Amino acid sequence: MRRTINLALLLGLLAAPAAAQNEKPIRIGVLSDLGGAFADVSGPGSVLAAKMAAEDYRARHPGRPVEVISGDHQNKADIGSTIARRWTDTEAVDLIIDVPNSAVALAVSEIVKARNRTFLVTGGVSSALTGTQCSPNTVHYSLDTWTMANVPTQALVAQGGKTWYYVTADYAFGHDMQRQSTKALEKSGGKVVGSVNYPSNTMDYSSFLLQAQASNADVIALAAANGDFVNAMKQAVEFNLMGGKQKVVGLAVYISDIISLTSRIAKGAVVTNNWYWDLNDQTRAFSARFAKRFNGKVPTDLQAGAYAAVTNFLAAADEVGASSDGRAVVAKMKSRPNHDPLYGESTIRQDGRRTTPVYVWTVKDPTPGKTYDLFELLRTVPVSEAYRPLAEGGCPLVTAAN
Image (tube, rainbow, N blue to C red):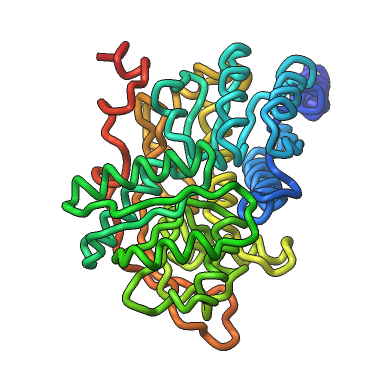
């Protein structure tokens, strides 16, 4: 009898690893811009962050297989859509994250919804993702155009910047940023004295900046991102616009942009984000781990968001018991607070907007020997002020719930 019991126990122990090996892995696809305009702020760094989150999960759950793959959408909606369809139709991908291009992100959101997978947007910024085009399968982690325009505009008006001139990228993102910022400006008692549009990827900003300078506006606002913002700021220095009576600001500024510019050039620039590597002991510890594997570079807020998104998804998928049921996973994420070591506790609204405090920083003087010691905190914006009011987005999920 004892020998029979021992044999049964032995067979059970042998079967457990085999069951783990045969278990369907959770598959995560990082759909990013791996070599273009968004590669520094997201790109390979977001792929690494997702892999680190998966590794940390596997360390806690050694019998649960998780795989992370990546794809390059090349900032083209058709390419991104093709990859998303292949991943969800034939490669059993449960979660897609990142997508630092709003046109691609909106297309992917529809594909994921139709196939009932999960989409956690850690790169795209369109407020439509939680507005008229919200989805029960999508959560928006990265800051959107509403927050990126409203928070710095309100902060600058409070500092005395009452009149504004916009230098705007002539595509959907730039126009959305200007529109959102203008609403916040006028609501705060300021006014627009002029604006000019420029084609994306312009190399010569002289005529646009000179028009802005001639307006005598308190604030010259660059409704631009990434390379456009960096190039415009460099030329603003050449025209002695920095440090004068007019303040030149960007509405979508990332730490990668400031690193490209150097803090000497960007000193005084205003940066809005929801995460910074030097925020607390936990963010510093993660950043040190990340930098060891990423040529000494600290993570951006979008890359930190990729880590948090994967961590939150895996926890929710465990609770649901079905990683491929996107609606159920997202519903679980909305039903209770989400926790991760980089952001602490966060909540997700009915419209899919993930909320955390938002920070307004200014770029400070360079610190010798400290390449990434760049920001000084101006204000912590509470959740109640940092995001578009739920009733104003036009999300059908909110209407249905009410």
